[in-house]
Length: 142
Image 1 (tube, helix red, strand yellow):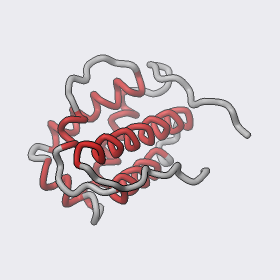
Image 2 (cartoon, one colour):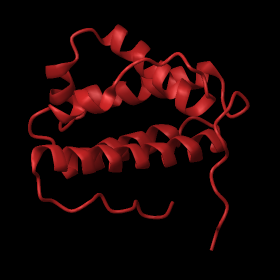
Image 3 (cartoon, one colour):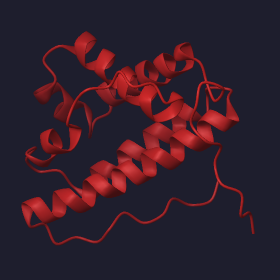
């Protein structure tokens, strides 16, 4: 049993270039994904602006920077028709991309954060939209 936790966020975890690569590669996959692509296409009008915002978000999460300004939860709660499978697919793609980055510490931290974000968003989405579905199960061990 491994009781170690993922490394802590901070400037030594990864570079801004690695965060930018993560965000851009991940959302390139999201945009062509048959499940997620249409949802994002219907709600993201300006991809360069959206990607910049997401880089700021993940930089704050992984490097501890403070430039992210936004309220992502409230924007996601009002999206119609989200499902548990969509959140699972988001995580699958995320894990696939982090596995290619060549930074195991960043991968562990980003994957852990993404799992917590997906679970929190799904729980709150279910409550807000009165969806009675189970929680997202923990991913299979890697």
